[in-house]
Length: 184
Image 1 (cartoon, rainbow, N blue to C red):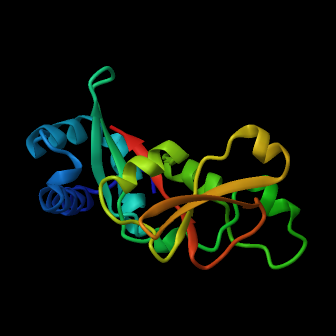
Image 2 (cartoon, rainbow, N blue to C red):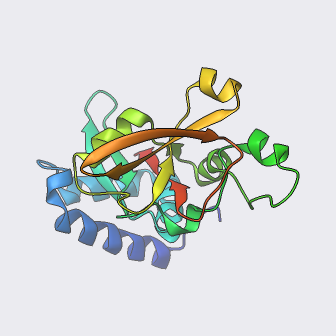
């Protein structure tokens, strides 16, 4: 999908506004009218937000970058987005599997959607805004030295603690997906 119809845009605005108003703790001091104006000015980003929503990410604003004049959206679904699970970390990992290949990889899906995987730091920031991934886990952007050695990292939250783990980048599980970020 390249561009949303007017009807799809309006539906997305309604969903985002309702989530924004329900979760003011995530973006204190920000006003929806300003967010909507920014979204209307940057319709190229609406497709990405729509994809985040359609894959179960429940995107919401978690901050504002005053230097770049951009709102920061993260996937804020309680668990790792359902439409982005059962995937390995990246294309290299996908191609290395000889059998039982997953359909896609986290980095490729993010690229196709026009979003970035959360970093470990961003994941920890998200956890300050609520309870996320209490039953699932999410791939996060893996540092190059770890990836070079064949690994990838993922996070979850158990016992009121964020845990960072490693796995072979080619692994995939029904309870592991990825969370993304988008600046608008």
